[in-house]
Amino acid sequence: MKEENVNQQDPASMDESRVDAHDTTGSGAPKLPSAYETLMKQHRDAIIRIHTLETENQNLMNLLKQALSDNALSFDDQGANPSELLSRIQALEGRNEQSARHQEDVPPPSSSGNVVSTTSVPGHEMEQLRVQNQTLVSQAAKMDGELQAMKSERTRRRRRRDSGDRKHSLLKRMFGG
Image 1 (cartoon, helix red, strand yellow):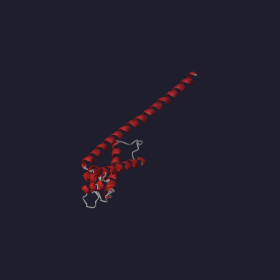
Image 2 (cartoon, one colour):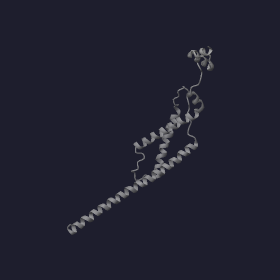
Image 3 (cartoon, rainbow, N blue to C red):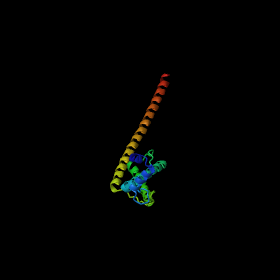
Image 4 (cartoon, one colour):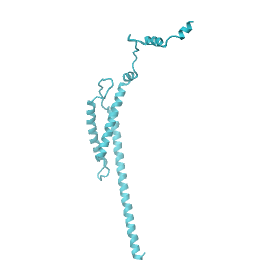
């Protein structure tokens, strides 16, 4: 008979007994931290750093788009050499630092309502960015050299074809062909 009573026990009463086991507030509702709160407590610095890097990445993409739309990095210029490109990139970096300082004044949105301050880029990361920048400058200079070589090759081919056409027409006139 006892087994029947246990099996026929109301599921709601079973839930109440479970709630009582986890009740820490005395209100009858379990007080367990949400997964979001737990992650924020454990990985707060990493989440803030990810947000900062995403913001910097977006700023750099916007600067690149702006530079390309303003033709700041035009390779059609005959005087575009690596030092000139480096000075242009440094000018863009200056704009980026100003916008990054402005963004640091504005805290990122936070769902908990707490104001979270962002940190600046550490020195080793800035050095890595500079190395990447130098690599890109050298690649841009190499591409510019290849572009100039392609343009001059096209011009040489055009001259050869034009001179060949002239020779052919001269021979036709001479021999009546």
